[in-house]
Image 1 (cartoon, rainbow over the protein chains, first blue to last red):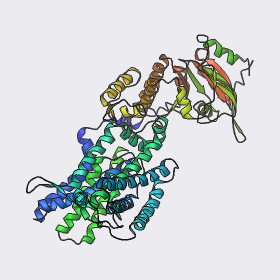
Image 2 (image 1 turned 45 degrees about the vertical axis):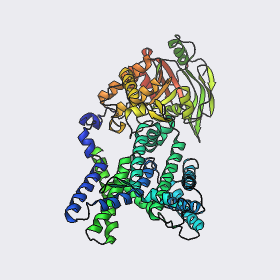
Image 3 (image 1 turned 120 degrees about the vertical axis):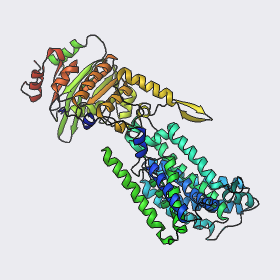
Image 4 (image 1 turned 90 degrees about the vertical axis):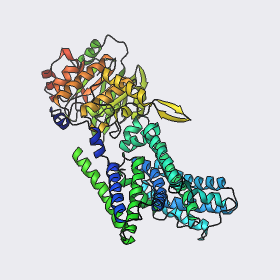
Length: 338
Length: 267
């Protein structure tokens, strides 16, 4: 069958890309650029944008989505999806509130809250990796199930009594690192940055990270070369749920109360952030930086619209446009490559 | 089947080693009413290149799939180093050191050459109980192995998706050799390769063979087959029509065997 056809690579010999080309082909780079441009425009248009107060609010708000987007990234790299993160956040927050309200110390409440998230993630992961059910359907089911359980546990009441250590607990999510009069760094931002560094390290410098990419790139090849594919798949869903749990701890502390509606609809914002940052829903691509930068863009757009006096009803339109633009950019890149 | 001239020829050519690496004895396989393989037998010795030749539908791919564990034979026996074995899955074949190398079926295109080379066998050190990749060591080792048996690759930090088919094959073959492979099955390795790449591929097979590894190669191209093969095995309609040392035959005779102009060669 070999007809001595010269392959296209032989003819054009374009295989190596220069560092510049690599940056230009990087979606997170373009999103970063977009954020810089929006920020410059907003600084000119509004006096309120570049104030420490506004930046404090923006960076705190984006951290919750950013943390969950970090957790979503490995899931999407393995060509999976986790629709349950918003509900897991709600359930985890309710359980946490109940345990603290019952007078338990803070560490017990947080451990049980995060444990709940890990358990739900473990169920997702087990059904997807070992029973081989479709991740979309499993996590869609869990979205409904976990939300319903949050309502059951909370008995549809708001929880705002956080027991003896309430002050410390509320400070965890609502507090900030004070660095003089103009520099206050919200705690959730610190948490997000630390987690982003951890995810960056895990994805790039550990066998686990290598396997996550391998499973998303060619699952069969990964299996044949001895990669523990099922365990890798299970672990990404547990990690995703754990991040939803951490976001819940911080957000409940910041809000000072939990309702069972906590995190409703967040799964879509989280997936949007991840995809805008360059993760590919077909698997194989995604970065920790991309997840964070996607979350930044979504919040900056929201903030910019408010400050520019545009009706908040337009928010979804702009976020939607960026999601579509993101996949369009990716399509362009692949088109040039192929 | 027992003592035809073909079998004799195979014994002659391989008098250098006593036990074959792989012996296939009386293997048959049916798909419904179609007999894909009927009573197929032949041996493969270490450091030997066997070309499996035959027209479309002769049973070449079925045979390769049985050896690599993708399909199970209905009857017959396979011996590995003289021991009877049952190969039920590709991972079992892999554990024995038998592997099929396709152009990119066993590579992850979205990660780089080094990561593919060490996939599942990463070098790590412990940092606070976490396994951390030893990137520099893996890079050096990959570079060295590819230099010895592989081909030139512009940068081993490039993702495999940016490499050509020939380069991908070279990575797979080098990886196979480096991790202790014994028998490699190549199904149409030169299809879709350019002229230059095909030549490199043929050289690569020579180098793999020099390391004592047995190679079974399926090809439709007589020139390629005679360039690398020590022996040719001709299949027709699921039966072995002839096994010849490559020096003792010529492309014309093989073509006539394949097309059925020469009937079964049992004297």
